[in-house]
Amino acid sequence: MYPILRDRDPESFGMIQLEYGQYAEDFFTASSWRVNLETKTLEFTYPDPSNPEQPTAPQPPLTAQVAELKAETAALNLAIIDVWETLAGGGV
Image (cartoon, rainbow, N blue to C red):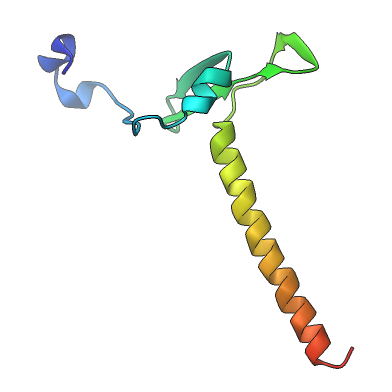
């Protein structure tokens, strides 16, 4: 696909493949992005709404962070329901 890479040994470079549209909102919102060479993941720098001139530290995509928080919230809600049902069933 990329002529300059075609003649190189594939083991001499790395590549991250994204699905079409993956992180589209992050790329649109972020002020910059980079590949973390240690973790081989994308990191984004987002503008700070309270201080747009001050760059923020690179971080994982916000869309991934939101998905993780939703999963954690769902797990916590299930745990709360389980505790509530246990207490309610115990006559408390």
